[in-house]
Length: 432
Image 1: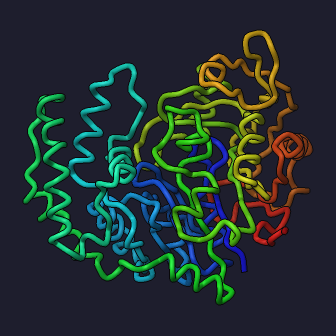
Image 2: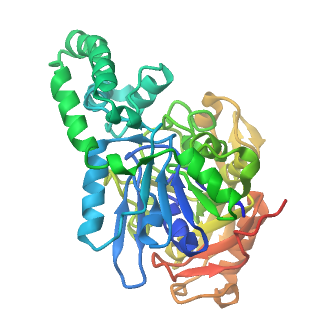
């Protein structure tokens, strides 16, 4: 059976949690392969219960699924324990959650440095959530990071923390005029948290590959989106990891040749959170309408999302970079009630048209959207369960997006609920 990658095809917040949840009963494993608690998924169950997940994979709501926090994730121990406790209080069985021994830990000094650095940058800030994700990845790449497995050896943990704070306390004090952290307090805090999830630490690389050998299906779930990828996104306004499909192999320990299906999640319009270029952004009443109708506020941060029309340039780029085999189009229902629905089909940059993602940061910032107007619809889509039940103009809108986006649209979301989905094609079937 295949390994399936589920990725965001825009700037994140596309509805990956719903897609993972829908696929949950068709897979045996769900793996979060990158990012930290700087992103979140909202899943709405048929009984109306909604769950906001920040670090734990969305498959946790399907009892038969084993969930894995992969080696590519950075884990804040306190956030992990709080999220587990919140799920357990609501009756969710979390016993099948495993954590890679090679995942890195977000330490208290990472959070402290993240917050003061962003404040120091002022107008030049990146738009970080201040949760320590970037500094944790910096330490990982610099080979001075603390890994989950270090919780099992206090001696190694203490040496790493003491070495890290020799430098970081100097930075906090001399650059930012902040009080340094006590190595003993940091170690004691992290060890106390680690004792509560030590039984979940595992060699997840081995387990996932054994599962594939045994014919089980593994779903690899990314956080954020393609345009926030540190290599392929709108740098420097990106996250610190690789949400794209290539990151799924690195962040899980599953070989690229094991991945047969890549499902991209697209909103029927576009949003992004934080700073950075956004060619199709709407800063008028229509942008506010999309924000309110779509409930565009961050699951983790609560920040208002910037909104804009659907951008086919981004969709084509995401299809190419990720090798997307199927698109899941979410929130089509939000567009009901509009006379016309524009689609960004290309950009004008310095007087010239381009239908592809500009090469340079400067050109992305200067890109002016070129729109194609589609007729709108007024009908409520929330009860539609087949493509044929959609209004003719809504069908035409989906078909035009499909033509422009470089991959077939196999599922369409018409509401937040698990059952409010139109399935056009089987997304899990490998096409080699």
